[in-house]
Structure formats: C-alpha cells, structure tokens
Length: 400
Ligand code: ATP
Ligand code: MG
Image (cartoon, rainbow, N blue to C red; front, side, top):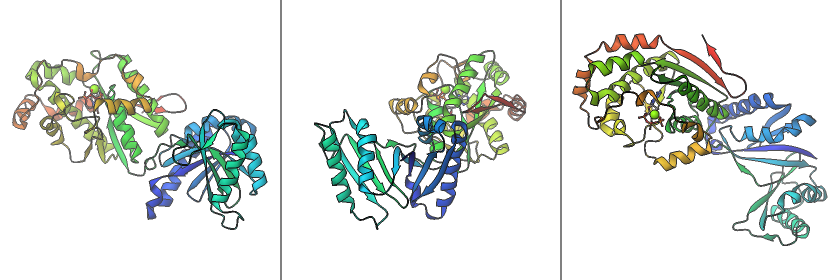
C-alpha cells in the first residue's frame, strides 16, 4: 500500500486544444513546489494528477505537499489517498486500517465508487455497498446518508491500482497560472488590491506588481507591508516581482500647483502613466486594480473614466461589483487580510483632499494636468524604480 495525493482537474477538461498546455503548466506548478519539499513522482492519467512520495522523508512531508497542491490553479479537488492492489479483500483491509480511524467522529457518510477499469469484476454500486458495510460494522453508530453525508468515501478502480480516500479538499480552482498572459497589478497596502491580484491570477494571468510610495510621507514599514502581501500571493504564484516607484516629487508639486479637490485624481493619472510604461516594458497585456464601484470618491464611474481614458490596454477591475464584506471574505481565505489591516499609510492617503471630486470633468482634469510638465515628471519618476523579487521559498532579492 502506498500513500499518494490525488489532484483533480476542473473546468479545463472542457478546453480541448488547450488541454495539454494546461496540463503541462499544472504539472510544472506542482513540480516546482515538490522540489522544495522532497522527492516525489508526479504524473497524470485520466484527468487526475498523482503525487507519490518516493522516500520516507517525503512521506512525512505529505501534509505540506498537499497544502502546496491546494494552491496550484486548475485543480478543483485534492485528496490524500491510499493506493493498493485491485481486489476487494485488499481494498476492505485498507479501508479498515487506514480510513476507519479518520472517519471516527463523523455521524454520516456515503461511499462513491468509480470504475475506469471496466474489467474489474464488480460494478460501482456493488463496490460502494460492500465498502459501506465494512465501515458500518467498524464504527458503531455511524449511518449512511446518500443525500447530504458529512463525509464522502471514494473508491476508484483505475488502470494500475485501486485508490481509497475520504474527505476530498477543495483545490484552488481557476485555470493554470500563466495560461492567460501577463498582467500588471497595482498593489497598495490595502485589502482590495491583493484580492484583485489573486482573482486574476486564478484566471491564469501571470502577475507583475507595481507599488507607489511617497517617502518620507510613507514609511519603510509601509513598503515592507506590501512585500509581505506579495509574499502571501506567492503561495499561488511561486514568485512575484514588485516594482516600487517614488511619487514624492509629483505629490509635492501637485500639492503646490493643483486644486486640492483634484489631488487624488491627478495622482491616479500619474500612477496610470507610470504603470502603462512599465506594462509595456514587461509585456503585460492588462493592468489590474482593486477598484470597486462607489467605494471611495476616486471610484465613481466618472472618476474611473478619468484614469481609463489614458490607457491603450484593458484595465481589469475584478472587484468592481463586490461589496467590502465579500472582498474581506476572499482576503481572509487567501491569508492577506491580517497584513492588509496593519496601520501604515499609503501614498493615496498623503495630502488627501478634504472634498475630493466625485464627478470630475475630463477637461478640467486636463487643465490641471497641464499646469505641470506631465510627461517629463513621468519619465523622472520612472527612473526611481526599485525591483524586488519576492519568492514563496527563500528570501527576497533586489533585481538590477
Ligand atoms: P486597496 O484596499 O487595494 O488599497 P482602496 O480601496 O484603498 O484599495 P484606492 O486607494 O482608491 O482604493 O486605490 C484603488 C486601487 O488603486 C487599489 O486597489 C490599487 O490597485 C491601486 N493603488 C492605490 N494606491 C496604490 C499604491 N500606493 N501603489 C500601487 N497601487 C495603488
Ligand atoms: Mg489603497
């Protein structure tokens, strides 16, 4: 008997021609992670990827490997299974010895069987009935509930072995990381933007991140917080490059030359111009922000149009229709919430107008913009770039 991890595909099964490309990306995602943890054989067959520990130490680390597999986009379910010989006596023995201890404490269960080896002498319902009987006689008081069981036991008769498992966990879902091209995430220290990054990464977008600071108005701690958020995202992305730019000079000039109610909008236009330049330099085909309609003054339709009008690539705003509570739920799920709520200032909160414009007119914005040499300031700010590579495994590195 061997212990293995089974990872089940989701929607990509439907994607015909893309399928093998998707499979390669998912296998790569698993292999990159596995290398850091131990020695595993990873292969796929029949819409399932198998992860098999090859030595004692890797078997001991199977929990960690399972955790990693749950962060690879494309898999809908991940379970720890026991592989054994394909005969009912052996299967029943494995169920008694290995699954029954895990089922104690549950009140209801059901057995689901699948037989992809049609030569196996029993039908799926017969296998389920027999194994159900084994469990009923081993655990006093437990009951079968086919409609809504607390736990599902699965028996799969596959080409080479039988697999026995219980309590499949949810995988990360989505489509494989990197299969939709690259996108530039505007990453602030808030709750929203890491969630936006996660959501697009889940749709296969390989992320590049940009962060704006305003030292000394924003602190070194604020930047570290952003790097920590990036680190949380690397559970899904493995690594994430964060490009940090300084907006200090631009913000001071805006403060001294523009009408206060336009500060935030002007600042966002500068952010967008710098982001676009970086997106082009790094082959990003879209920009991603954590904006949500109506959440703050700069996120009304009119205000969004003021920044939209500058770009020649799409801006993805995956949170646009979400409420804060819904966003927070995802932030908790991906582990960024705690870090996001640490109290450090963001460049957007420096020199915030008391009465920001919620219905700005583009003409008026352009008039404000023309008070300063926009292109020149963008070029100058672009030179302040500092690029930090954040990795899931290992320390951050500054890139030249
Ligand atoms: P968040 O919770 O993500 O900070 P927010 O509700 O505070 O969002 P804003 O400050 O208006 O909203 O920012 C809207 C979006 O603009 C953010 O989600 C993020 O994508 C981007 N953004 C804001 N500030 C920065 C920054 N300092 N660096 C990079 N991107 C930023
Ligand atoms: Mg913010």
